[in-house]
Every structure is written in C-alpha cells, then in structure tokens.
Amino acid sequence: MNSRESQGDNGEEAPRGRVEMIPAKRRALILERLRREGAAGIQELADAINASPSTIRRDLEHLVKQGALERTHGGALLQSTARATFEPDIALAAQLRREEKNAIAAAVAEALRPGQSVIFDAGTTVLAVARAVANRRLPLTAVTNSLAIAQVLADVPEVHLIVPGGTVRPGSTTLVGRPGEDFLRSLHADIALIGTHAITGRTLTETSLDVAAMKQAMIAAARHVMVLVDSSKFTAPSFCTICDVADIQEIVTDDGIDPLALEELRRLKVVLRVVPVLRQDRHRG
Amino acid sequence: MNSRESQGDNGEEAPRGRVEMIPAKRRALILERLRREGAAGIQELADAINASPSTIRRDLEHLVKQGALERTHGGALLQSTARATFEPDIALAAQLRREEKNAIAAAVAEALRPGQSVIFDAGTTVLAVARAVANRRLPLTAVTNSLAIAQVLADVPEVHLIVPGGTVRPGSTTLVGRPGEDFLRSLHADIALIGTHAITGRTLTETSLDVAAMKQAMIAAARHVMVLVDSSKFTAPSFCTICDVADIQEIVTDDGIDPLALEELRRLKVVLRVVPVLRQDRHRG
DNA sequence: GATCGATTCTGGAAGATTTTGACAATTTTC
DNA sequence: GAAAATTGTCAAAATCTTCCAGAATCGATC
Image (tube, rainbow over all chains, first blue to last red; front, side, top):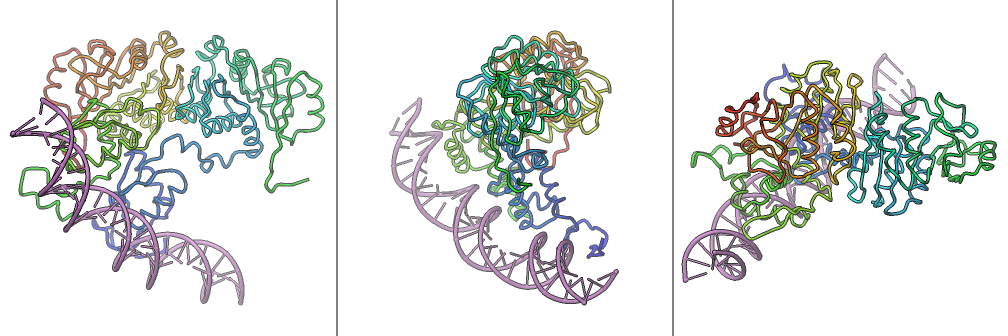
C-alpha cells in the first residue's frame, strides 16, 4: 500500500523494480503452477511471477525445506504424494494430543510383524500408525476405510493395500456403508486397529451410526482387536455403542489415563497397554 | 532471451540451440514415450524431444542408474519392475500433456449438470475434471476408484462421494478388483468418464488386466460413457482390450489428433468432440 | 504515534559446476 | 567388411553457489 514505485501503470515489460508481492503469495503461485504442470524451470517461473531468478531459487529452497517439492537442475518437481503426507508441517501440527498419539502409534507399529494382515480404522491415531508402517516399509496386507491412510500406504511397495469402499462422509475422509461393510464380513485379518470416540466403563461409543457399524464390521473381521485411544477418550459416552470391552482383545493408551479408569479396566479380561509419553513442555506434575 | 533462438533461418525447424526444457522434464518425456511404445531408439527420441543424441544417451544413462529402464544397443526398453519405486521422473511422466488434458477437462466439466451421477475413472485427465468440479462446487453423486480423485472430491461438501473399493496397484493410486468391480455392477450412473492407455482403430486398450476389467465394469454401469484421451493416445495398442468404440457414446480429445485417426472415428457412430488447445508456442507437435 | 536500529528480503555479479552439442576413435551389429 | 551405435573428450552455454549492497519490514524505544 505504501506508494512504493508503482512503476507507472503496469506496463507490458517488467522494469527492474521490486514487485509488490509478499513472499508467501509468490511461493503459493509457484506451488500452484507446479501442481498444474508437474515441473517448472527457474527462468520460466521468474518470467511468470516477475521476480528475479535469485528470488525464485530462494523460494524453491524454502519450499524444499518445507518438503513441498523437489529441486532439480534448472527447476523443480512436485514432491510425490507419499512424502507430502509424511510432512507433519502442513495440517498435522494443529492436531490435538499429538505426542500421545505418536507414542501410542510407535508402540503399536513396533508390535506389528511382517506378513500380518491388518485392518486400519479411520482416525488420527491409526493414521500415525500407518505413517510409522510406511517409514519402516513394513510388509503388510493392509485394509483401510480411510482415504488419508490409503494415500499414505499406497506408495509403499511392500504394503498390499485393500480398500473396502463405501460412501464418504461430508467433510471427512472416512468411507462408511456399502460395499465396504459387506466386504469386511468376508475378510479374516490378523489384527484390527480401531479408534473410538469414547470409552466409558466397559462400553466403546461413537458419534455416528454409520461409523459405529463400520467399526463393528472391522472388529468382527479380525482375530485380535487393538483399540487405540489417547487418555482423553476415557470420558462420557457418545451416541452409539460400538461394542463392549469383552469384544476386543487389547487397549493401547498413554500414561495420562485416569487411575480410576485404569483400575476398572484392569479387572476386565483385556490386555491393557499403557504407553509412556515424553511430554515436552506442558504442565508437568 | 536466448540469442540462438532467433537465428532459425537455416532450416525450417529444429534450431540447433539449447532447447528450453529442464532435464527432469526431458527424462519424463522419454519415460512417457517408452511407456507408450515399450521401446524407443536414440534417434527417434532425439527427434521427438528435439535434443541431440548425446543428450539422449546421457539421459538414458541417468534413467538406467535410476532403475527405470534398460539400455539396449540403439535404444532403450522399459524396465517392467520400475513401478515398484516411485521416482520423481516417473511421477512426472504421468503429468505430461498438461495443456491438452486441462482443455479436455474444462470442456467435460462444462458439460456436467448438477445432480447427475458420474463415475470417475482413474487417470490424470479425469483427475483434472475432478479438480474442475471441485472448483465449481458442482453438486454431483460421484463414484471413483482413484484415491487421488477421491481425495480431491472429499473436500467438496456438495459432492456425494462413493468409493467402490478394491486393491491398490503398487505405485499407483488406483483401486482394482474386489469388491469394487462387483459393486459397480449394481450401480446405474448417468455418466462415466473413462481414460484409456491407447485407442487404435476402434479398439480401446489398457496395460493391465485388472484395470481393463475395472473400466469394463464402469462402462457397463453408465448410460453415457465419455472416453477422455489426449491426442497422443491414438497409437499402437497395449496388452488388454477394454472394449470397442461401439460400446461407448462419446470421445473427447484435443485438436492435436492425427487427421487420419479423426477421419476414421468420424465414420463410427460415436459423438466425437475435439477440444481446441491454446498452446503456448512451446514445442512443436 | 513516530523514529531508529536490526533483521529479512531482493536483485545482481563473479566464480565454480553442470549440461549440452559436436566430433573423432572404437565397438557392435548384420 | 560396411553401416550404425557407443565412448570419450572438448568448448560453449546455462545453471548453481556464494557473496554483496540496497530496500523493506519488524521490533523496540521514546
């Protein structure tokens, strides 16, 4: 807005003056162009954005550090979807209870064995397990109804990925209903990794009927059901009941769990694993 | 900008100067051609890409080291196992012909009407249609077997998205086989947007049996089948036949199509739409 | 709110590095 | 044995890296 060299009236040729564009917008333009074309050259970008090659290079350097693209001699390539989803920088940083979920995910991924067939429920904790599996290139047969998890696992050659299918709930990336639910009934997996909205007493609950039905189908299709819940989920129940604790084999949570809830669960016939969390700098004590 | 560009009075084309293309894109072009033809000679590639044989040789050497192809005397063969790993050049090869694909996609998106049920096949051209639909927030019932397209459409509240499900082919984001194929048989959509690897005469072909079967199911499930192919796809056939032109209702391509192929198609009972492309005077046909 | 110093951003230049096309000598293919 | 392809080398051109000096933004102080 500062009348900084308005360069006359926007002539056709670009004079050497500094262009009025904030770096973030320039980088967004670069990314947009790369998404359209897949690749772009330095000079080509400099002409299109009306900035100097030096600036473009620095922008690319910045974007590479962010993990959004890959640099090549003379230009840049869009980073493949796999690594893009690994980046915790984009939307993942805003995720709640990240440390707890990552700790749980690491423990679960450690417990998986090569060659097992594993059902991945939707949910951020299970997604974290999928990322860990992808990083270790663990050879699995994976079944998931989450588009996000499918995207992560699709680029891992060692993983045989099956998507049961279904309808996407608006605003989410979860598939529910037909044909996935029926298809799951014909499967028999070694392990199911299930998330839930709440565990109250010995009851697992969820907010939506569709989702609850899908989880029930997953639970029925696996020999060993692991429920992954961070400690904040031991709270008041949601609308629909998924199942009873007796229907599952193992619960994995973090050490922030309420001692009373812990005590109650210990009396049940379920393997209970409490993962310690290295908390960085929240309240300690 | 390039001083050598302007001295093209010697021949009618092929200025000897350095071509404006970053190496990565050139290698992607080589890969794309190899994927289409199966094999290619040095001179043939040099002519097509407008680079010198020396450069092509060095590119091939580079790609061999990357494991994407196999070198032979006089040319190169596609390495069949190259799909296992997701190298950037290979990823880029799928994004070529951007202008043509975008032009086709815009024309197709324009033809869609609110409330229609549309099957989205996998493929970059169809993905471009999905992006256009997302931008216009066109209310549709969408069915897709592509994780990438599903990801795009999942964010649009106006779109009712259904994923038939299936198994992911390694290195791709396409779902094939069960349960999606069976599920598609129970669907009846208004429109199917289908991509194909090649159209030869009146036969549509694909490289993989699984994919061909999925496309067949999609074609059978729609009242109006539109095949979306950029003009480079009118070439030698691939392994598996999908169907005959008589089984589809409409072909949408760009104006780079070979006149002979065009003439041949005009004689068939299929709606043929040729979309003009605004080419930026970059590469000659 | 205004001013001053610090930090960051931008464009450009010089030298190092990479890429490219051409050519001669050698190898391979038929 | 001839034609085509490959390898190695070399000079020109483009790009990359590293620096520098203005200019703008930011933060703090008044």
